[in-house]
Structure formats: C-alpha cells, structure tokens
Length: 319
Image (cartoon, rainbow, N blue to C red):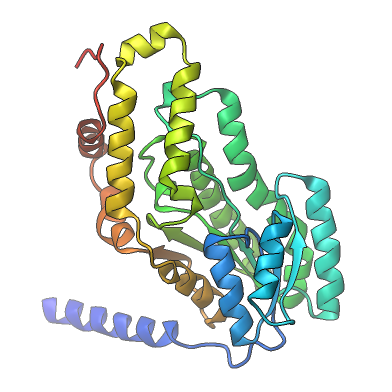
C-alpha cells in the first residue's frame, strides 16, 4: 500500500512541477497596473516587468515616487498618482488605464499598496488607528479590485493581492494583521466568483522584509506616540519600563527576521503574472516557509504561550 502512496505522491509532484513551470510565450501585449510603486516591492516589480516587455502602468502615491520611477525605466512605463483610500482617485485611475489599454483590457492588477503603523498591544489602540490601516490595506484593495473588474474581464486577466504571513497568524495588535486577514478572505471569494469569467486571483504572503513598512525608526516612533497618549492608569498597569522593553524586542525581531532580498517577493508576483497556471498562494521568505506558516497548524495555545514569553510582561500581570 505504501508503495502506491509513494507512487501517487511522486506523480502528483511531477505533474505539479511541470505545470508550475509553463509560462506565457509573450508579454508585449500585456498591460499591468500596480499600486504602491513609490518604493519597496511595487517599485521593484514595476522595473522588472518593464524590462521583460510588459506595458507597466504604475500607480504611485507621490509625485516624487513617480518621477524617480520614470527616470529608472523605459519610456514604455507610464505612471499615475493614485490614493487607494480615495474613491475619486480610483475612478480617475480606471479612466486613465482604460485609455491606455484601449480595447485590449487589463491583463494584470497588482494590489501592492500598504501601510503597517500603528502596530503594538491592542489596548494601546484607538478605533481610528484601525480605520487608518484598514482603509489602505483592506478597503483600498477591495475598491480598486471592484473598479478594475470590467477591464480585467475584458482581457481574462489576473489579480495579484499582496497579503502577509500576518494575514494567516495575528502576531501583534493593530490594524495590520486584521487588514491582511481581510485581503485573504476577499481574495478567496473573488477567485471563486471570477472563475467562470477566466480571471485568476493569486495571493502573495511575504514574511518579514526590509521595506518602509519594517523601518525600525518609524515603528519605534509610532509605539512611543501610542504610549505617550495613554492614560496614566493604563501606563502604570504595564510599568514605565515596558515601552523600552517592547521597542527592544521589536528591534530584535526586525533585525533577525527581515530579509533584504526583495526579489523573493517580486519573483512570486512575476510568476503569478507570467505563468499559465498561477498558484493560489505564494509564500515568500524563509521565515514564512519555515516559521510562520508551520505555526498556523500548531494548537493555538502553543502559539499563545510562545508569543507571551517573547514579548515583555506587564508590571501588573496576573499570570
């Protein structure tokens, strides 16, 4: 019996391996719109797709980011300013893309724009802190996707949504993990609903990488701002030295886990756009594959205990 199991497993792996490496023959007639191209993953992806011959339509938040990207790429790459939290800005982006693609439709949409801060203990947050992050990472992804669906259906295109390993395991408080869980659920429902229209939807789940989202100075400044606005009673329950210890742990985690090689993420995005059979999910980074995703399948109480012992303990804890 075990021989048959091994044989079936080997055949399945061989078929998957062969199928996964089948690529589209040409990209010269393919238009891809990417959000969040000022820096980080989006910026690198736009440059790499431009070199491969895609018609890259890069959405940037700032004029500085757009100008810098245009100077580093070919004249074929086009840029536009877009704020994914603003419905009017999204509407203008759709009209601009429609003019650019003509009757070809939009082959690829990459929802990459995102923010992280504020992150920290849940009790330190206000409801506006959640709204701020979810407006970009969650509702921004949803509204942009819905707005571009007609153009995607026209080209039988594909959507690539950038989530995170923290969209599978909530390791900290704040809106980031919640917004990435939202991206996961929205992407799954969108993929199933668009199946009959030939639209493919992929989710990229990066681990920790050195980008603006993991900038240590920004994280520390955000944490101290949260700490300073708390009531004296709440601060006393944690202890005056808690913030220093928390910052120290965050710095250690970011220095230890953050990978400087952003191409591990953009490789996944490129595969989702170039492969004949893109994967449903891509895990980018050694920490994603070897730590965070395996932790998902552990009993929750084990993960709870580990995280409780990694992070500093409040002064007035009861256990």
